Image 1: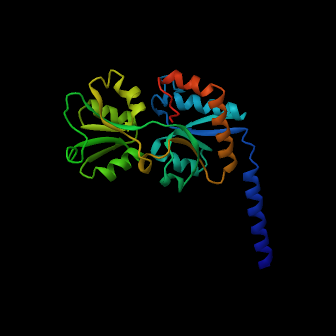
Image 2: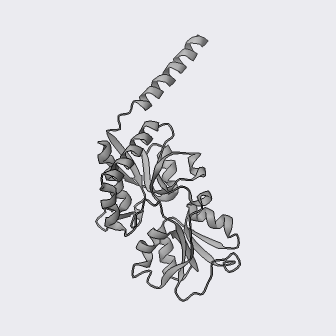
Length: 258
């Protein structure tokens, strides 16, 4: 009887493993944030738009798959992937060693540095001494949160569920600086009426130790075949001009980077 139970358990494990590997991925559910313009946002009509949204649809078309987008708050985006709410995350998620412990990643599909921004009326400089006691706004559970926590211990961090909330507090004068992806902050804040009185300050930051290897698509570790499909699709849209068409719709620079 004990042998039978062991055999049955082993047999079921094999069946489940084969089933997972045999997924045809004719439909792929993709988790997106919907609150990070110009990469991903929800219009007043309730529609998703942005660079990441267009990239997601282009990748699904390349794979011959139906694409279902699932909006998800950032701080729960990996747990929801692991809970199988969706199959992949396309949300400007940087490929970091910490995240690799939980999920698998494709190669990068975008890459842009981080920067600080300050009010134009401020004379603050970016040094550990000058930032001591300053209030800096960041989106919670991001690479920017981790970087400032590690490198600027004297800073008072204000953490937000979305980048839009950080922008609102910035215009209300509740933070001294912001730190975020430079492209997202340029297009989503500094180039808008809301952010007209703010500007970048200091250098660009891209240390892989904190900021990873670029933005990749996060996928559950067991779905290795889906990682391969997405990698092939990224290469496809890079080579056939679709990536450039989407890129140029939103940006004046190549978001893929070097």
